[in-house]
Length: 352
Image 1 (cartoon, rainbow, N blue to C red):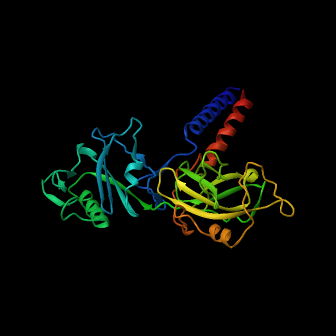
Image 2 (image 1 turned 120 degrees about the horizontal axis):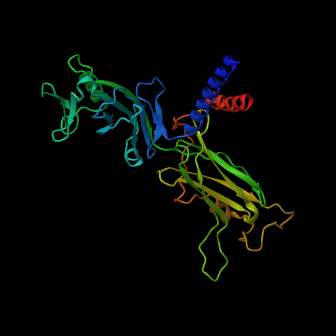
């Protein structure tokens, strides 16, 4: 009996720990990089944030020194280590929005035993300096500075020198111009309800504005019936599979007049645009269409109407459907943890 109760208590503790871990882990997070990991290089879109997260043992009082190196981009800052030896640094949207497309390198520097950084950046001169000798190692910013991979290589060589007790971990990421695509829509009929969707390199939870309007739309006076027939709204990007994130927008054509419709998708915060067209056809018999009286009356197609319909507004540029590497995010709660949590609950109920 004693053995049974001891084992039962142990099981309860383990199950509760698993449950606590599952609850504590967020189901989704922003783009996350872990220095020292061997994961495939992450690609982000301009304007998406990046989190640098990891573990630094020894709890250095001066924190960690963070170096960012890329094309015409150099940044050095520090981040404090938490009580549990974890650290977390955010490269904000305002930073990545101005990054040129290309590869970027991150180095996390630990001061080690002497509690100081032996390789530092002098902002006044733009040079990287060996604190022990006081000598300039190379130019990091300003005139004569090294660029991109050369600067990263020089920094690694400096910190890994046998006379320097600092240690480091590195990680890289790739910045790409944001892209959005719209899947083919095809012809629809008045009264149809369907979903327009597509892909994008923007990160999950980024917002897109979707606008649908008649190609025959013309401004009207306030005494005339509205010339607008269409719909609009914002949608959030959803994490996809196979390296592509997705978006979708529900459409109800009950109030649409038969016409060619323009679809424009644009980023709310990021500079990305895509456009396409589709036709709404008459669902009635003969010349009668099942559309509300308030809808715009569009004349039967003629040579002039056709020319108007096939002309795309300059405000709705058509982007090529190019597939690019897309933003990845920290994975949702691992399946093993979730299953372990469920098993924990069931075991607790059984033992109690």
